[in-house]
Figure 1 (cartoon, rainbow, N blue to C red):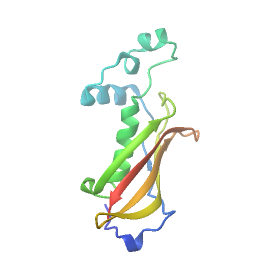
Figure 2 (figure 1 turned 90 degrees about the vertical axis):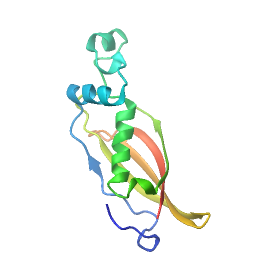
Figure 3 (figure 1 turned 30 degrees about the vertical axis):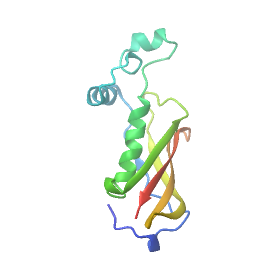
Length: 138
């Protein structure tokens, strides 16, 4: 984490990207256990195929957790004021997720200086899977 101040942050600044290893079955099983989300579409190939999918795929919340890691590797989690996303696409087995963020606004709320970030995940093919926003207190 860095000591970040309003004076050193500019609109257009980008967070250091976070690239994760390719999604695999072990990652999905571990996330299912850690999150309590044992939805069969994420861990049972037969079930996923009956649902019309080629195979199991990542939980949306796993990718959101990766975005949370992007943010908390940049600032302390106590500085996070807002964090929300929209799920746009499925992250399949073998996809390598990269998380990025960009400063889009600087503002103040009740005397607290804050920045707004646009955040997203993409696959190694450049496909956007999640779009979101986060607000950080400085």
